Image 1: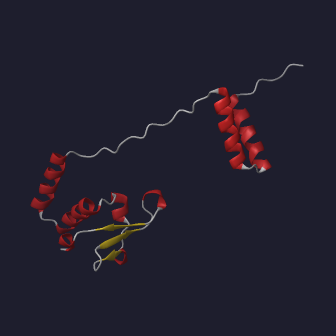
Image 2 (image 1 turned 135 degrees about the vertical axis):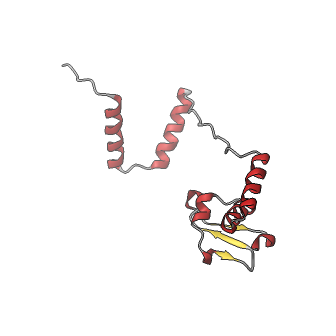
Image 3 (image 1 turned 90 degrees about the vertical axis):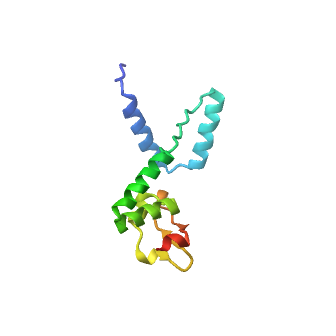
Length: 128
């Protein structure tokens, strides 16, 4: 009997569908695959974690001076908040007035990176 060749992609889909339908114990499967990797001496390639691209201090100074020369209050507050709190731009965009506690100098970041909430502090000097 001649068997029809099936692509690896199709086989993988069929296997995934079968595993999902059986409702397996994922902890057991994980330990099984770890055991198989160690027995067969298969190394899982680890992805390189890249460091963020941080601007040089000179670039920050030039940007800071440019914003201050323009004397645009809104731009100055955005730059101050980013610099003093370390918040991400996406987090800064989602800040509401109710998230800012001027008494304790705190800003609540809702659903930041990884959909996690956190609190960042700001200096009393940056209240102005």
